[in-house]
Length: 400
Image (cartoon, rainbow, N blue to C red; front, side, top):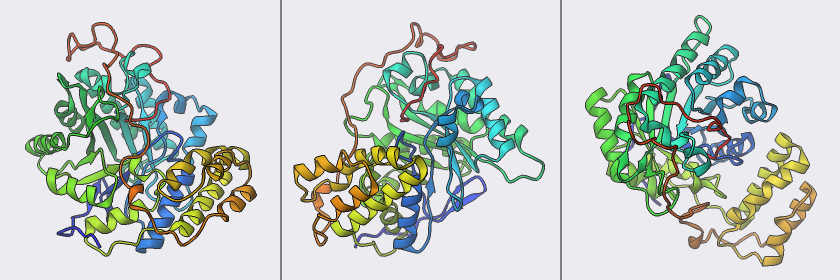
């Protein structure tokens, strides 16, 4: 059994006080209402409560304002989901303001997170994603627009919708932006900041530099005391990792992305480890098959059975990592078309196989580091007052 050495204080995000300082990071095509519901169900079943914060798939500001049908579907929340947390990707203050105001006026969410972490070339080459915080004034104007939009759109007496901001260490080792980004975000009204402790050049490769989380925590504390929580993100693949990150960096909470792929029960383990309570036993293969089927059911309810089964296919390898399952069965599961077929295939797996140790460790995409593609002259002046991302920067992305 693994426990933290001391019980951690609760994490406050605006008006929300979380019993577990653990946040699910938005991941495109993964953290839809089906996956979030499954994570919440498993946390409740294994610990007796839902203590963390589960953020929906990232949506773009302009697509939300224009009510793109796919984007509106992505903002679906479960009836019992509280707080409803939505992450916005944006590159322009005008669309940010309109999207934030719409969220407040229509009660679309209870918490708004803003993503400036996407490192993919098609976004950074236009000045979006993790390239944007380098332009300090542009970054400040966008965070300010979100906070103003929420305030202007909130009905009189409505509960506060807190705004938080997530970003990376910087563009590359020569162009760090996270210290300025944390200070600027707080100055513009963000109530918490989160750092993915990699540069855009690293993408998802190598190791996250947790020392930069410490630097950001110290920097924010110097300017704002304990009023602005700092969350750490990067290389949390087991409960022990979260405990170590918090103890080593002093961060107030953790953001978990790739580590929960195929392990939606991870949040119960994280909560237990951080709060010093008994660790739930990892599921054996029989339990994993039931979780997989439940995931399929939830996806079918959200997307319809046909698309729901297409969506469950990409999760198969993550769920079965390290377990004995032959190549033929894995192939059939990766082409499953109906819930009935999913049930029949899962029933062929042995049930009493314990969770394998070699199933732990890095999951999901890692890739290789590379030069960050930027607009011409982007690095010339970090304080350029009229800087703007290029047309096309506000594309659907996978976050950071």
